Amino acid sequence: MSPVSRGFRGRRRPVADPARLPPGQYLETGFPVLSAGPTPHTPLDQWTFLISGAVDQPVSWTWEELLALPAETPMVDIHCVTKWSKFDTRWRGVSLDTLLEHVDSDAAYVTAWSDGGYTTNLPRADVSDGKAWVAYQYDGEPLHPEHGGPARLLVPHLYFWKSAKWVRGLTFTLDDEPGFWETYGYHNRGDPWLEQRYQGD
Amino acid sequence: MKSLVLAHPEWPGGYRAGQHVDVRLTAEDGYQAQRSYSIASAPEDERLVLTVERLEDGEVSPYLVDELRPGDELELRGPIGGYFAWVQELGGPLVLIAGGSGVVPLRSMLRHWSNTDRSVAVRLVYSVRRLNEVIYHDELLAYGDREGVDVRFVLTREWPDDWPGHRGRIDKALVDEVAGPPEDGSRIYICGPNGFVETAAGWLAEGERDPSRIRTERFGPTG
Image 1 (cartoon, chains in turn orange, brown):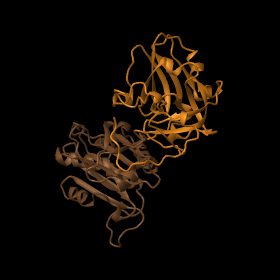
Image 2 (cartoon, helix red, strand yellow; image 1 turned 180 degrees about the horizontal axis):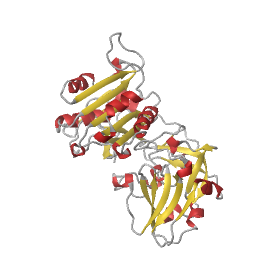
Image 3 (cartoon, chains in turn orange, purple; image 1 turned 180 degrees about the vertical axis):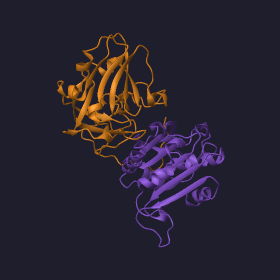
Image 4 (cartoon, helix red, strand yellow; image 1 turned 60 degrees about the vertical axis):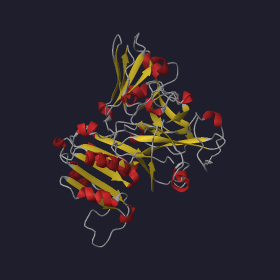
C-alpha cells in the first residue's frame, strides 16, 4: 500500500484512450532517446543481419537483401520502462516471421544482439506470429541512428528495451540467457501490462 | 534544482554511484505518478540525496521541488540501473563529462571516489550556461584542489570577463584532452541532455577506444 503524498494531486493529462496506457505509464508525444553508450555507425555495405546459434544452418541477409524482402508497415503503441508511452508510432520493416522461415530450430529462446555490444533475450514465442519486426523506417523516414538506425528490432508488446537498437542478428539459445539490461536488474520478460519493470515484478 | 535529503530507515541502501531510484507519488484518490531520479549521494553517505531539476511541465518534479516539506514521506524503489555506475574496482582514470543537471550521478561518483580510492586520477568537465547554475560548486572545486583531480567548468552562454576556463560549448579537442588517449583505458561517464551526450560520446567513439568504456545516461523530457 503506497503512502499518500501530502498535497499531491497530479497533473493528469486527458488521455483519449486510457485503456491503451499500461499501468504506471504516461503519454509522451516526443520520442525520447535512451542508450547506454555511444551511437554506433555501421556502413550499410558492411551491414548484415545474421540468424545463428542453435539452428540447423545459420542464415544472413545483406542490407539490400533485407530491403528486398516483403515489408510491413505496423502502426503500434510503444512503452518504455522509464514510464513514457507513445501511441500510433509508424514503422516499416520485415516481420521476423519472414526471416525465421529460413531457419529450423527447436530452441525456445533468442538473444538479439547489436552493434555496440547490446543484447536482449526473448522467448521465441515473443518474436513469432506477427509480434516482431526488423524495422528500418520510422514515420516514413529512414530510422535515425539515435533511434536505432539503420535497423532496430521492434517488439512493441514488451517494454522498449527489448526492441534492440542497431540490431544485427538473433542467436537461438536452448536456455534463457539474460541480456544486457536483464543482467542489470531489469525484468527478464518485460510485459508492460503486467508492469514487469524490474526483477521481482 | 533542489536536493532532497532522505532518511531511509527501512531501505538497506547498498547502491552504487551512478544508479537511480524511482519515486512514486500517490494522490488521495489513489492516482499515481512515478519517475526516475539519479542518486546524488555516495553509497557511504548516511542519507540518500536526490537532486531534482524542476521541469516546468513535469508532474513529479514540480511536486518534489515546490511542495515536499521536511517530514513528508516519499515512496522510493531502487537502486535501479547498474551499467552507468562506477565502483572503486573499475579503476580509472575516471573521466566524468556532465551537461547541466547531468552532473548529479557524476557527483555521486566523485563523492564515492573521495571516500574510497583517491589513487585513481579523476577529471570532470561540467558544462552549464552560466556560473550561477553550477550545482555543488564549492564541493566540486574542493575536489579540484586535490592531487590527481582536474575539475573544469565550461560556461556556454555567459562568463565573467576574467573567466579562465572554456567559453562556449564543449568541443572535440576539450573532450579528447579530458578523456586521455585510448591506451589510458579511461572509464568515461557522460550524462546530460541527449544532444550533449550524443555529441560527446560520438567524438570519443571516433577513436580507437573500447566502446564499453564510454557509458552514457541521457536525460530525456521526463518530468
